[in-house]
Image 1 (cartoon, helix red, strand yellow):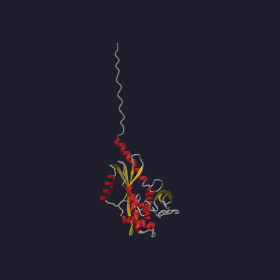
Image 2 (tube, helix red, strand yellow; image 1 turned 30 degrees about the vertical axis):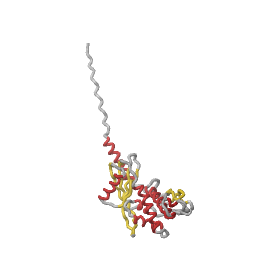
Image 3 (tube, helix red, strand yellow; image 1 turned 90 degrees about the vertical axis):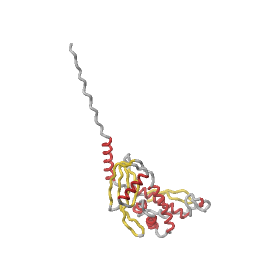
Image 4 (cartoon, one colour; image 1 turned 30 degrees about the horizontal axis):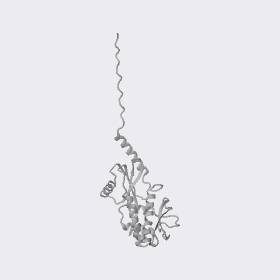
Length: 259
């Protein structure tokens, strides 16, 4: 009788899965390339200018109606005062960049008409640099007032401009200080030179921090004036205070030629 010896088959070697670190690095590299290629979307549906223009064109008439009625929103002084707020009306405003839909305040007497967006105005021009300037954190009340005074012209009093400036600053602060996601794979810094007005006109860079989210979409985290190592420490500390705890990569692109 012959014994049959069965040799055990060699065990299959496990397939080495790519490390999560390598996968993360490839994803981050892809997102950085996309951010550099796409850059900052200023115009078009969902672009930075469209969103900021909408916010400015809704905040400014709020200041106008406060000055027109003589009291703040929800102020008891408006009770039985002849005319009061009466909701809003939607209006599509064509601009140099894109059409923007805004909600404009109304009063019960029908006597209020916004000056920055007039009733039969066909196109609102010269808003691109103004809106970018108004949106940048770090501008003084005087600098913002100077931009708005130029936009409104001589027919609007300095007191009205001051009231409008307060409302615009409040409206922009709500956007500038909104909570952020905890994690962004990529932060993308873009520099744009715009004209800042305060007694004299000067070209100054404003910096836009754009993030690529974990699902690949883009979000504008904020706009700032100023530069230098200490200033950037302030910017990233602010982003952290708003909830952004970590990011994997930062890309930077400069646009010295402006818009």
